[in-house]
Length: 333
Ligand SMILES: Nc1ncnc2c1ncn2[C@@H]1O[C@H](COP(=O)(O)OP(=O)(O)OP(=O)(O)O)[C@@H](O)[C@H]1O
Image (tube, rainbow, N blue to C red; front, top):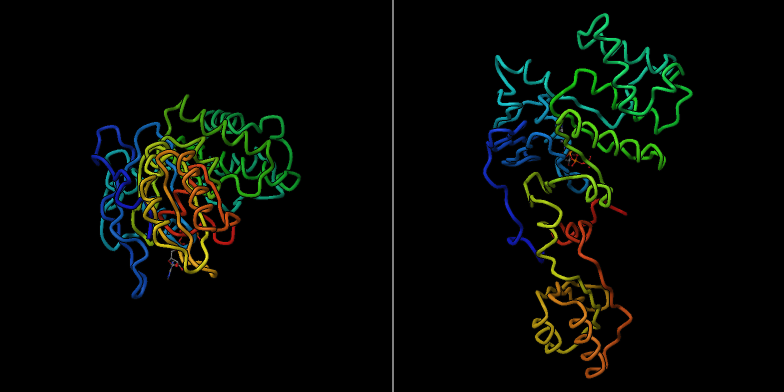
């Protein structure tokens, strides 16, 4: 059970006037399994929203519904005030860009030829097309390599060109699905720069999925965490980690450790128990980490308990995640 569930800020006031996306009660069931369950969220104009969840949480299914690829069983989405269904679906969809994880480019064509092709698919012609292709190359840092074939590109450059292709129609909102997976540090930096420029220069909004927490902490204005298809927490990075207190302290105790240990530690914050192969681990969400640590060492001396299984964690999204879901953001990591 989580240490902070119930203390996390929940979505505040949907349907703000400048929201570029609102979703209400999105639900999707495959067979007997409800994969997304009553999900509501919003994205503000110019906002970079981190969209997180452990493997199998329902992110891809939710994003497919948010982008009009998959119709929800229940619930509704608006893009820029337009329902993403019925008569307005086409216009609503034209205001979003979707950049999937998979590279969807023609390797034997140059970067510019690829973008000219995709711009044509978007209905751009003539000077407008040339201007937009130049812009997309520039904003993703690929102008110098525009005449090279994609097959000669590094993985990171291909990823940036993939992003450029999703920006050609200048959407109001772009979905970036794990845009930095497997890319080199330089491309990662350039992708960050691109995201920040899109917001700064065009007021574009971004929904950003990533398993790399420091990246999300650095880039995203607000973060939504889902698990088992439901919204688990939503807020700024600081709002989200605030309930974790000053720090987390995890102390593995042998079987038969006195109950008094737990009682005394409760004075220093919320205490939870986890079963371990050798006994129990107490997880203390400490108000004051230094004092909690002193209490632990004091208890260890008094009750002759080992300190070898003691670990301290900074409150960050990674630890929040573990506490909310009982799992690391990526299984096996
Ligand atoms: N078309 C489908 N039919 C049946 N089950 C599905 C279908 N699509 C997804 N699922 C199941 O729904 C659950 C959520 O899947 P989804 O891909 O949305 O999760 P995710 O959060 O994107 O996971 P990951 O981070 O691993 O990509 C998974 O258990 C998946 O097996």
